[in-house]
Image (cartoon, rainbow, N blue to C red; front, side, top):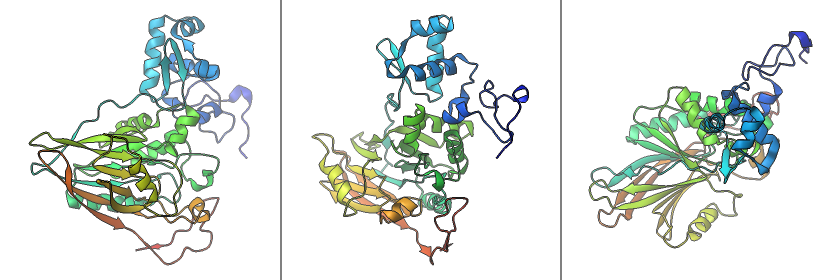
Length: 381
C-alpha cells in the first residue's frame, strides 16, 4: 500500500488543481476519481463549483438567481458557466427556472444530416457494434481488420450500434484493463481505427458507456466526441442516445426513407432472431424504417421482417465471464450492407449483406477468466 503523504507536503491534484493527493501513488484526488470527466472543468472554475452544488442539491435543483447568490457572482456569469459545463458533457439541464444535474442526457444532437445515395441510388456502408474497448476481452485485432475490409469495399461510412467502451460497474471491474471514464474515452479515441474517407456514426448505449451518465451525470456521447476532437480526429460522429433515425435520400430525386440505428435493452432470447422480430413488430404506424441495425445482443444476422431489412451487428469482444455463465455465444464480427433505393418512392427495394465472422483456433489455456491482470488469449486465425 502506498505511503500516506504528511498533510503539510500533500501536492494538489493535477486534474482539478485544488484537492490534495492522499498518497505517493495517487494520480488524482478521490473527488476527481468519483466524477470522471469533470477534470476538464477546473475545480477553481465557477462551472465545476456549480456542478458540485447541483449534485448535492439533488433533483430539486437551483435557480440561476440562487446560484448567483451562493457564489456572489452576476447571473450572467452563472448562465455562462452552466453552458460551459454542458459543452464539456456534464448533464445539467433547466426545468423551467430550476437547473439540476441529471443521470441521463436530455438534449438531442439536433437534426441528423441525410445519408445521400450514390448517383445510381445505391448505398454501401459498413456496420458493427459492441466493441467494448477497455475490456480485457475486446478484440482490437478484429476491429482493425473490419476497417481494413470496409476500406477495401469502398464504404464511406460505418454505423456503430453502441457500447463502444465497456464502461465501469461493480460487476465488470475485473473485466477491465482501462479504468475511469475519461481514461476509457481517451483510449477509444487513441485505439479506434482511423481510415481515410471513412466516418463512423455511433449511437450511445444506455448500458456500459451509459453507466457513466447514470453515475456521474454526464452526456457520455458528447464526452467521447470531445475526446476524438482533442485527439485531432474528425471521423467520429455522435448521432444520439440509444437510437437514431437516419434519412436515406436518393441523390437525384430526393426521395427519402430511413435507417434505424439502435442499441436496445434487455437480455437475449431463446432464438437469435426473436428480439429483433419483436422490435420490428413494435414499430408504430408510420414509424417503420427501411433498415434496422441493432446492437446489444452480440449476435450477427440478416433477416427481412415486415418489409424491414433487419441486421444484428455482431461484436468485437470475446465471450466474457458473464456471457459464459449465461451460456451466451458471442458472434465476433461485423459486415457491409448494400442497398438500392427506388427513385420515386424512396423504398429500399433491394438489399444485400456480407457478414464477416471471426473464429478462434484452439482452446483457451488455464486462467482464461483471470480476475487480476491480463487474461490468457487463445491462438488466433
